[in-house]
Amino acid sequence: MEQLKLLALDADDLEIVSAHVQDAVMQVGAFDWRPKEKRFLIEMNRFVWEKASGAFRKHNERRRSVLHFDRVLAVRSAGIDRAKPQDVLSLLTVGFAEDDAPAGTIELLFAGGGSLALDVECIEARLTDLGAAWAASSRPVHGN
Image 1 (cartoon, rainbow, N blue to C red):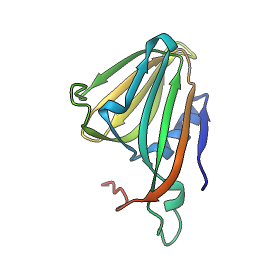
Image 2 (image 1 turned 90 degrees about the vertical axis):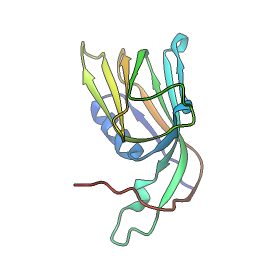
Image 3 (image 1 turned 60 degrees about the vertical axis):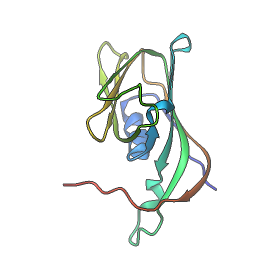
């Protein structure tokens, strides 16, 4: 069992984390904003893209993971109904827009148009797998 642990301290690192969480699914209720700690966490089931590569692409796996952001000053959402914690979202990408270096906004974009914006003092993110993988019934497909 190979568990992934990644740390992002700049925009390039965050791109790598974004690639690993592309197509992760989570419930709206899995968002955990802790303003006193300046921390935002998301529990998710990520698609294991690192196992899905190769000529035959036989491995379709998901893993329980946590995406963790520190130094978060504010969290905003659009197109996400926080009153429906059971709704499932599919994460497309995580990006960063620098404002007053090293501060800026980390944006998480979801299928269907929802988004989260995290105002941060700087980039400090971690992606950690929590347990064993399980077989995914299908591979995410993206249109051209």
